[in-house]
Image (cartoon, rainbow, N blue to C red):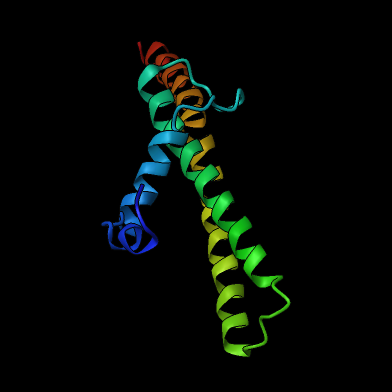
Length: 124
């Protein structure tokens, strides 16, 4: 069994590496049904967007916990936490918008294809 000092000396994953690992773990979760396109390539992309949303939602919860800490009295730290929360909220909102894009692009592509076919038929 390791002592506490030995444990503390073990190499740790950097924040970026641990964030990437979290995204890979969460990427296995199911997609929202309204975002599924039926195309395996788009759905694979959407799985990573879903994972990024989940990671950011957990980060948001962590920042909330820090902000609600009764021992937090430093005004500067409170402002930094609030800014972090706003940034995370905006990231989540952006990812949610990106989540709807593939299905929208596919549907609009079909509409454009029909309009081009109609236009071509009129020209003949």
